[in-house]
Length: 94
Length: 311
Image 1 (cartoon, each protein chain N blue to C red):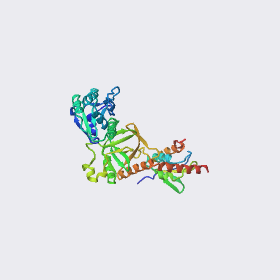
Image 2: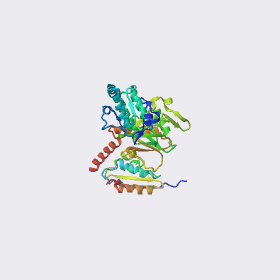
Image 3: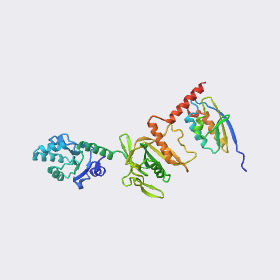
Image 4: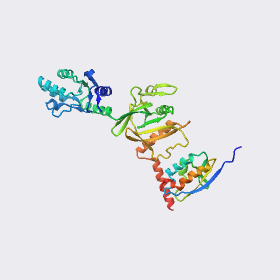
């Protein structure tokens, strides 16, 4: 019997001026792809995989917007730590 | 860097329609200065400044002038030129050497050659060949292709599928320049790629063996050479590999001192590499035409985000 998969939810605010455009999206995808857990990002009702560049670009993550990251799987916690760092450090843009 | 007459003949005998009249044993002579000289002025007796380290080209002017001289003068002037130990004498327009010229060449053990080309064409072409022979060059591991005018060097570890990818691309109508080993030579601000003449137009396909590409796919499937535009590296797929995801700022690689865009493409089962290499080349061509899709989309997104953030 499989153990229940661990789910973690966390909300982030987009701090960098240009928002989640191509470069930050690529950083997010690279970070997310390192983990085996499933990771979704978005708002209520609309979510995309955090491992998809094209998906992330449709999320309209402009400065000041809030996005919820949902990670499901064993390494969900570690993945969120890494993703949190990207948001907090403004995707190393400023 | 000095080259020998033999090297020049090996590389350019055909292109220059050159034949050796005398001097088989003296072809190891070095051409110290990679340029040609027309000795007209020297033949009039002016040797104060004479480019004696260059090959001497006898065209119509030199011939007509020599013929206007008396036999003694002719021999004296020619002798003075040969005294300077010129590396070689070339007659253009397929003219027969004057008996004096030939005799003196033998006496001074100076190779005498003849070309069917007219002098100006010969000088242009021969200068190019001398430049090519002395240009910086290198032999690199990789398969060279030409895709819609874009020169693509395909690299990657043995067995990753370079030749197989190249074969697929040939099947789509693109051209092979070199399989697995590519010669590179810098010509001015560009790098020209071509195959070693021994293996030119052949490919090795695992499980099949060596094939002759134009016999199988026709002459449009091959090119003698192509200018290098991009380098594509095929690597085994790794989940955490640091791959390019947006294409806004591709990596660069240096080849013979010049920088070229470098794309590292992950290979995994079921991924049609020929398709992806083709897309990479075509996308690069689009950029050359001034249309950078990734950058334009990014600018559009940023513009929209800035307007939204301001509200």
